[in-house]
Length: 423
Image (tube, rainbow, N blue to C red):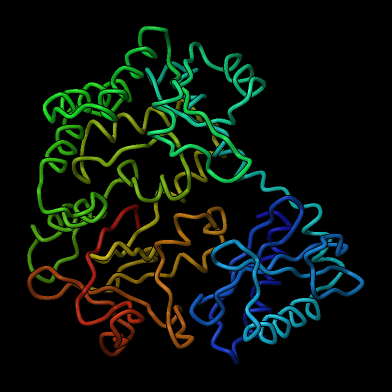
């Protein structure tokens, strides 16, 4: 961990402790464009992000001192401050500035995430260029300069036509920002074929044609036949269950094949789609058909070896060692397996692990559950199998149950548990 990262982690912990009186449990941080973005958790207590601007040069800063200023960001991104929230935000902002010191400000200004940059530098373009992916679809800025740069990077490319681009991307992402879908591949034949298949998927009214197009596109995207077949089976399922939840159930069923009360074996790292995608690792872009899919393990093991240097592989091993607890409403809680005590998995919360700071991104922010009432995530310390193959989250005494239709996150039902990585 870099010195800047250590300094910012320490600052976030001090800030969380200072705000504990108002139910704050922890503070997420990331540095973007030379500014420190703070998300105070749980969001039910403080539903705003605050941006610390070194030098207070930003016009939106409404609290400043001689080191920095603080501006707020509402959940809808409008920046509109409701009057009843103004005093709370102003008070928290003064706490942020009072705890700020010159060294932390310097850490923001000098911050560079070399580790993270190293592993996300491998994207679809790099995989296609290496010949490990026949074709892919990416989104870039819709201008001549961006298209020219892409053309110099990949063997072959073809921008999506206007009608298909509008259907698949929804037009502009935001006012003033126009994006263009582009098909890239190892040769012109692969690129044209992906374009044609995409048109079938987006415009055809024939279910059989869509199924055939999905299967062929999966092959071009390097998805093993067994995993593509599982995906098609899910699409044919009329239950309406989201794919992510269906796969959580699918993986959980493999754990129930073991004797009652026995800990199932952990899943190989190379099948940990959740960790790979939540950390934006482009080499793995589909759900495996099972946690022990040999084709997926072989494919991803080879890609990691071919695409990353030794230091990057070490970081990816840590990321892919993440375990997840999942609920049927789509929420996920990442954690690490620290060891096994008899019939209990001893775990730690991924939110507090130093390596988890690599991925303060939209995926994890959206899916990780919030603890109402300022509950301490660190109180949760283990998993135990129960009768019928279900699991319970163990804190030394009993189920940690929080009542409420919307605010409770463990509720009455045990979670679906998916275990990845090695102890």
